Amino acid sequence: TRSSRPQRMLAHVKRHAARGDPQSVIDAIDYFCRHKEWAMNVGDEKGTILDSVVCEVSPGAVLELGTYCGYSTMRIARLLAPGARLITLEFNPANAAVARQVIAWAGLEHKVQLVEGSSGDLIPQMREKFGIDSFDLVFLDHWKDWYLPDTRLMEELGLLHKGSVLLADNVICPGAPEYLAYVRSSPRYDSRYFKSHLEYTYVEDGLEKSVFPGASAGSRP
Ligand SMILES: Oc1cc(-c2ccc(F)cc2)cc2nccnc12
Ligand SMILES: [Mg+2]
Image (cartoon, rainbow, N blue to C red):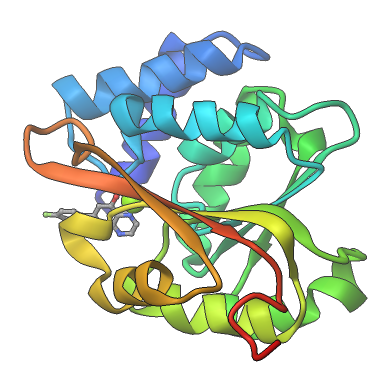
């Protein structure tokens, strides 16, 4: 049967990127998506914003919702300090299989834990299964309808601490209106929009960065 786009992307990485060199893997994927086949990686333009937020937060524990082929997983993992951990959740087993190979080609598998399944099922297991107490940074890049319910779930489970940062992709295209309304209106978040473009296109899109000021904020004094 015909190969999938993620499989063709992986083949391109193996042909053009150097093992153990994350930047060359990132560059190969960007080349593939810009010149051969578009794919829904966060991309180089929004990726630069992601990089700057990761460096600013310098997180010890990161959760990524939506791995896809591992592009943003690598962008985050390559910037993590020794001992820092990135857990990435992917719903689609075929995509997860490709992502594992991409992450391994970059030599970043020791910094990343890729877990297959739905975020709604896995988020409640973070403590017991992965020994995570709370996340310093969460990158939301899965199905837009799940941004808000998953955020509420993380709040309720106490997985966000004072200063935890939520960074959400695609808040304009495809769009996450309910999520945006929530983080921008709730006294519980300081939210800021980073205007950019949909990966590899001139269509507007952007990232929303929302800092969780702490569970007490917004509740009655
Ligand atoms: O970055 C993204 C872009 C798109 C997407 C698809 C088709 C279009 F026409 C426009 C945008 C979907 C995404 N789904 C999940 C996570 N990230 C996505
Ligand atoms: Mg995206």
